[in-house]
Length: 302
Image 1: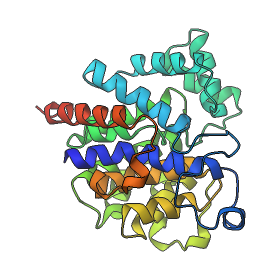
Image 2 (image 1 turned 30 degrees about the vertical axis):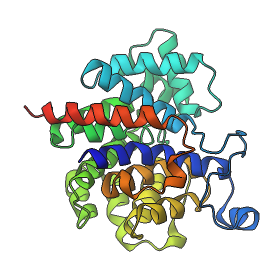
Image 3 (image 1 turned 180 degrees about the horizontal axis):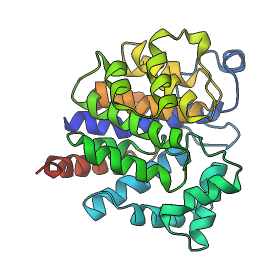
Image 4 (image 1 turned 90 degrees about the vertical axis):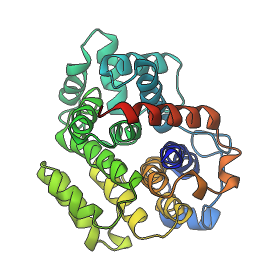
């Protein structure tokens, strides 16, 4: 089980680092410039080093560190860590997240910052910025669905108030909890039975009937969720799942990170190619955090 926890968090960072250099290119442009992306390229619009991750992994680590330090989920603490990260002038930050964190900085409670951002952005807060970072919560509560749902929702509300963003985060964490148990068969049906928000439920169930040409790797949370689930379910290894995801193009780092969380949770760290592990930024800390969350998860239902 430790192997699957570690694989999940490493999968986020690996998918992020593989996809970031081709973010905003479409699949055909990726093919023309790089063939098929299977290695850390570096560069891209953020001028990254090979194996360097973006805000997707940085914010995931904020949540993971908080869970370990606070011995559980603490939205107030997480929001403070997000703000501290912002003061470091990160290379990249999504507009929805930035708008919400600016509200936090002005003194808004975490419970309302996301709603204020939602209103300021004209109701446009259904981005994938909360789904990309939520994997530690799915691991922490892998045996406690009630707390998984509650904390996943709260983690999204800090920045992404739209119900689809919130419930997409729940859906991903539910999937992670199932996959660390090895439960891949029937995953979509099981998720569809538990997700109440109609658009999110439909998006999950639709994955079973999608063709690759139907996938839209945009920044919309349900597009990202569908792409990640499709790539995971239509491949047979961690490597092939993540490679399929990042080569879709578009929001390639986030689609890669979300797919990486699924593939890592199911296949485990042992399935990660060594050539991806060695150059990965922050690898040691990611592995240590995963181990500490595993220890906390054993106490979660006691």
